Amino acid sequence: MQQRLGYISLLVRDYDEAIAYYTSVLGFRLVEDTPLAPGKRWVLVAPPGPGAAAVGACLLLARAKNDAELAAVGRQAGGRVFLFLHTDDFARDHAAFLRRGVEFLEEPRNENYGTVAVFRDLYGNKWDLLQLRPPPAGSRAGS
Image (cartoon, rainbow, N blue to C red):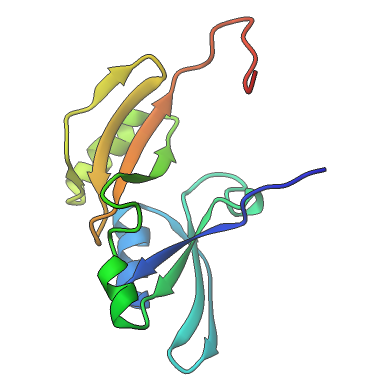
């Protein structure tokens, strides 16, 4: 059996505003933007990197359509870190995000699992920017 997560739905106020932020500020790729019905689109963005969309690592930008959904924009995880952006070069991405105005909520810190700092996106969702440390020699992932 093989399974994987397909997409993660992220509530946004406006499609174009969200596309601009995720592509210009975070450097994501616009994978798809397909009109479905008046006022509704299928919009996928993914971080840069080979095959990100092929492994299901896309955000589905879902425009909030009522008051309850609008109230949840930026709070989908109840104030906790919601999304984890892995990087192969923490210092490079941290510096680039700072130059583009990303709000970090803490200074970078070194943990036993890697280098990490929490930031907020356009809507207030908390993210970890994370460079994982390689596992110790001889260890097995998932065991």
